[in-house]
Image (tube, rainbow, N blue to C red; front, top):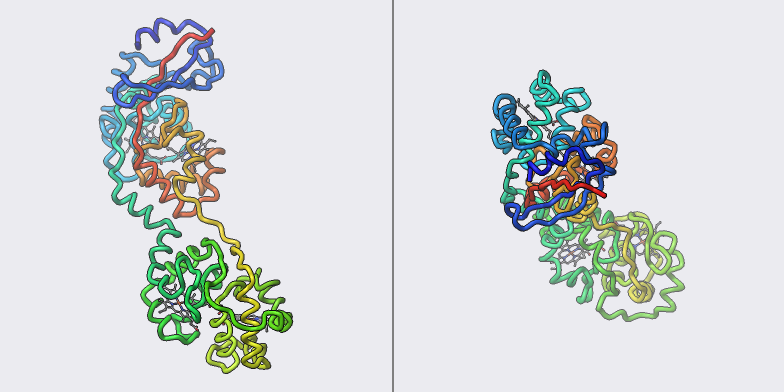
Length: 417
Ligand code: HEC
Ligand code: HEC
Ligand code: HEC
Ligand code: HEC
């Protein structure tokens, strides 16, 4: 096939077809690469593609360059065993070449790489790129570390796991079935975190809750609150005896803080809609007698007698709770869908100028994503893509792609019409 490519070099308007080979070149999946009028007959734009058109001799020459100048760091077959040094094997050849030119011109700065390419001719760069691109890619890291780390880092799942022991009292998914036990749904996570911390540090007095929560780290409390914040709100499945109409009239003074119909829009003030009635009445009582300390609520509860408390509680218990404003953080595979648009399915790029990410070293991917964020490595596309990523997103995406199966791409060049 390589010979065929060489003999057709003089034909203009070539069609470049990328074939990802599952194993060998026997079972292939091919797609046309959108390269406007790509072909060796074209100047400037196609210059970048020279490594794609390399023949067997070029690749053999490239191997010699690699052994002399690159193998010490990248491995003779392009599989790096060193932290921070990328695998090159099976990487897209035009991308490798563009990268090498960027180190040579100073557009990308890395001392090791600047020194490595300083004295190499353009021809040597083309051939080294062609050689490494032709090698079998590294295997995905059986990412026990990566996978469990990223699974552990899904905040909603960890929050759910930490809240497993709470369901007995607070109900499945936070909807109480037991009179006296508060529901935990429909609450702003910030309120829940503040409430849980107050139990932990003794500011809100309840020995039982203190014991349950003392085993959970503050970071984990955030996840627990996020988990409850994302559950579907429903009214507590508990009785709400009391005069709702009287309660509604008495609750006029409460709407300013707790919202119309008890749906608060301020994280500092808990929502009351759909809350267990017995808990609501008991909370008003303990504010009144000072056992739960809050000056605002103490003053508001002071004039209420027991039946007024019951009525207010019945009114709020019958209101429909609403989901708080919480967004589910995107998982690595959600985020990766946006990356795959350019980097190919599961990070297997079929554009010879765009890097494959599948099975790349996770440490290198992390380093590079941080470099794009900091502007130390320049790319308009990647600056935009990485800007909003949290450190956890970077870590999760790196582990995700490091664990993906790489597919080598064979670029087949056919003459166009
Ligand atoms: C002294 C160690 C060292 C040597 C020798 C070396 N490299 Fe590198 N190479 C690195 C490091 C470190 C990086 C990552 C730099 C960065 O973050 O920009 C890198 C990055 C690269 C990249 C960018 C890969 C990517 O995915 O963007 C290419 C291409 C590359 N090297 C090719 C070569 C070639 C070809 C040679 C031989 C001519 C070579 N390197 C020699 C250490 C080395
Ligand atoms: C044995 C029953 C029980 C278990 C188990 C339990 N709780 Fe509670 N929880 C209560 C009771 C009772 C209250 C009300 C205490 C009070 O009056 O301050 C409460 C109050 C709370 C509150 C405050 C609600 C509000 O509206 O201010 C939060 C938040 C909370 N619990 C979270 C949890 C979490 C998270 C767990 C599991 C780690 C848990 N609870 C386990 C019984 C329990
Ligand atoms: C000025 C604002 C404000 C007003 C008005 C107000 N509250 Fe509150 N309420 C709060 C704040 C803040 C808290 C949380 C205090 C804490 O951390 O214990 C709270 C807590 C509560 C709680 C405990 C909820 C829980 O999940 O533990 C109940 C019940 C309550 N309020 C009922 C009422 C009622 C009934 C009225 C009207 C009579 C009222 N509040 C008026 C600010 C207000
Ligand atoms: C609009 C197209 C586009 C999208 C979408 C995109 N990238 Fe990129 N990416 C590029 C280009 C172009 C480069 C090469 C830039 C350079 O030379 O530094 C690149 C380079 C990279 C590199 C460096 C690879 C290496 O070997 O050094 C990583 C890592 C990367 N992208 C990750 C991602 C992730 C993760 C996402 C999704 C959150 C993403 N990209 C989305 C276009 C894109």
